[in-house]
Image 1 (cartoon, one colour):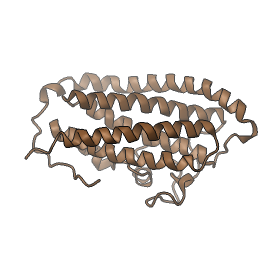
Image 2 (cartoon, one colour):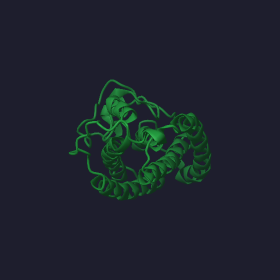
Image 3 (cartoon, one colour):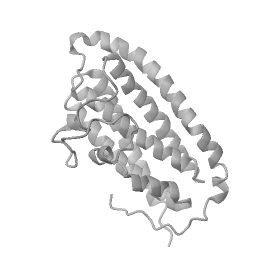
Image 4 (cartoon, one colour):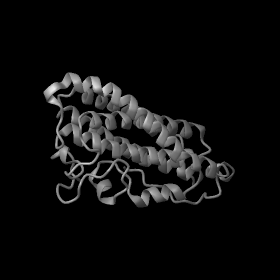
Length: 242
């Protein structure tokens, strides 16, 4: 990411909109839980047919497919978290709409991947390090020591192992800043996050023969490529204040 986060000198901006934040924040976890539960149920039903057709080719615990499903859930969860943060504080309707789109689409995709693991008879966590399935494909990947984190983990080691993930300090900065500075920081972090997601989606397509995985990874690649272009334009349209 070449565009460094702006210095925060406009903390007074958007304070009227922030009056609504406690109520929105209080509903956030309930919305997330409900949507994830619903999408997981649908994904299990759909993936059941896929699993039946796959027969003896069902992926194993250390497979590329299982690693991708676990790691991409974790990756998506951070995008959802950042989107909830900005949705609850921005006064920019275009930013809010983008955040809503990311929340809904990535929660649905998380449900699909959760469903795959259930149908494959695999746990949601594994014994291999994060990104081990993408060995050789990500320069910052750690190959030893830590176990795969659960979806939504904020473990700094897990974050550093995955391309595009924001650090805990950057997430805290996003919570703290206000107004246009928050909008710009969200776009900067999400552009990089999406680029990391593209790396993962492209990598798995060259490593799997499971059609369901290829179809979802291709959909992620298409959607996030379009959203990166959209966010770059939005960032250019919202220059830093002096």
